[in-house]
Image (cartoon, rainbow, N blue to C red; front, top):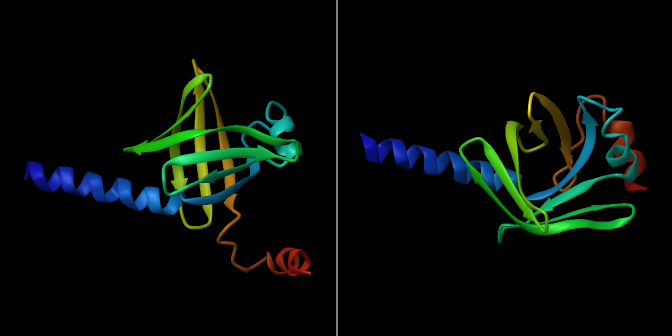
Length: 131
């Protein structure tokens, strides 16, 4: 039974890892006032298969280093240390991460920029982007 529990956790982490790989664009936050700079600059995070990432914006590369997922936590390292994000939602098209600081938190909502699909309410946006 213990082996099956460990196997299940390993499969769940692998599934999350596979879903996370690709480019993610920050589209919304639970605190737009505090995250205005990141939203205005067009923050994009690209997670690679080799567990490296690049965080960039219109100003260029912001950070790059390594990442890993354990249970529902995404760990990202850079020159300032390790940042922890709770994975609230992870699908092929959406990623929501919770950034906690003491008694405060901010949710960061990303859209998958590498697997965009046309869906209800988004046809015009993507048709315009393709031209």
